[in-house]
Length: 207
Ligand SMILES: CC(C)(COP(=O)(O)OP(=O)(O)OC[C@H]1O[C@@H](n2cnc3c(N)ncnc32)[C@H](O)[C@@H]1OP(=O)(O)O)[C@@H](O)C(=O)NCCC(=O)NCCS
Image (cartoon, rainbow, N blue to C red):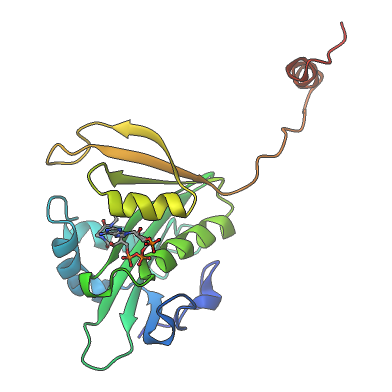
């Protein structure tokens, strides 16, 4: 089991998830050794557009510890069962952060573990990590024909901002969804021209 003490959310690593699955689920950083088990789930959960194994490996190469902290634009986790005899990997999630944006790269929960809050826990982990890294917005793509996942995302504060037609290899459309991570602060004027335009926007400019 990996020791996961690095990164902005390192304090959660190696601990049970505080969410609905409680003590039964252990969360840790995904390593290349997890990829075969992750691929089994990936093929089951994304039958039309499973990522190739190589894609996971490339993603992990851009995450700690393979990449240095400064270069680690990715972070991936696996959730695994503490129960002996249960399937090892119950779910996984990955994110990318290149400021000012973060992206949900993937989110998946094994069929037997779905509907008990693990997907919510993993998504909230990505949200927290994105906030901790200073991202302003968190973006994701979700299949238009996946209303279950869309419901989860809307409940967690995402809104649709675009529709990308024929985004997926089988011709399926994608919704682009966004969650704002910070309250919008009024822009601080950096020049006299900015100040004038701010005043004009507010309708109280003086000629
Ligand atoms: C989407 C997914 C990650 C959700 O994981 P989960 O552990 O079942 O999620 P939760 O138990 O936290 O449920 C969260 C919400 O998701 C919604 N939901 C998720 N899957 C659903 C489904 N198949 N049917 C209906 N609602 C669903 C529910 O509205 C639920 O909200 P509720 O608790 O208010 O009822 C999981 O269903 C999954 O892996 N699906 C296949 C892969 C996938 O679609 N990933 C998302 C790619 S963008």
